[in-house]
Image (cartoon, rainbow, N blue to C red; front, side, top):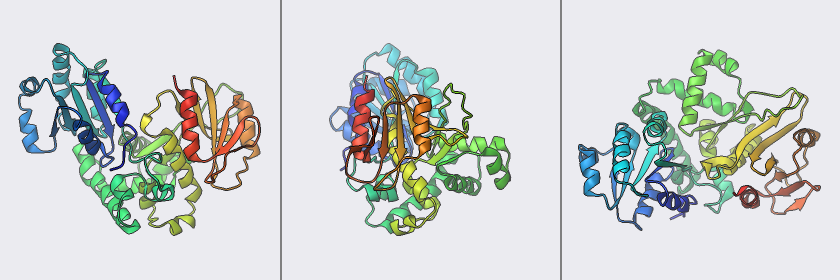
Length: 384
């Protein structure tokens, strides 16, 4: 069993909020984690995709009253959106922390319903697939991604067979279950097009023209995949400078295994010879730094001007801006544009992330270090 980094945070939230909502993509490990937490608490677990468990909530207030001294875990809670109003009334008349743990696969309606009815009573946490702090084999994690069944598969072939099946299930079952009516084939083709744009600035008009749909539909599809935790839109940092800035977001497939599956890259050898190599590595690093929303004190951006100044990742923190450049080289050399961007943003803290093992300084404000050493430093610098 791989220990999940977010487990202790869930325990902290259960000591503060009456309702804790754990959201994230299917198969990221929500249910396994909730059952591990339940072993240390007096709890009851219901899976709302199972008809027998749904029947138990025919009279939800009565059910809650019968188990009022136990932690009630409700899995796939978006299947019963009317439950949120009941939860609000119940926790108002039966106050106390740690009453409910809700698990939800990505659903736009899930956050909307709970934010409208449980404001001030609920704490949200996002769980991602395995991150690089939870596993030992970084190269395998980059290739296969972090979904437990892909990462832990007996072979690369088995891992990619599972990822392909996951994509099919997501398109053919999960999206319709969210009440969204989009043909699975059309959304899969769009998703593949996003994969080919991985790490690039998003050009909705060009995508719409190539795909034969309207720009409005492109925006809808992109927002859907983002709300389902499948993609990340990294916004540009639009500082108050006199420079002409790039103002469109970059798009990334959040899980590197899904990216490689969509692009039919099923081995490390094939990845090494693919044009997506650099962008894949960049996106993997960015997701390890930003994924999961574990640190709400940072807001991620990228920075680029039309004159060529550029930073891969800019973290806006309470202590100032932190610049991060990503280089897949054992002898990383930042470009002149990187240093120009640091000057333009008046940024005095910069890191170059690379695949080597050593840590050293390039100058007074720029350090070179591996990913596994960067994340603890970031947490220290932005902790409240």
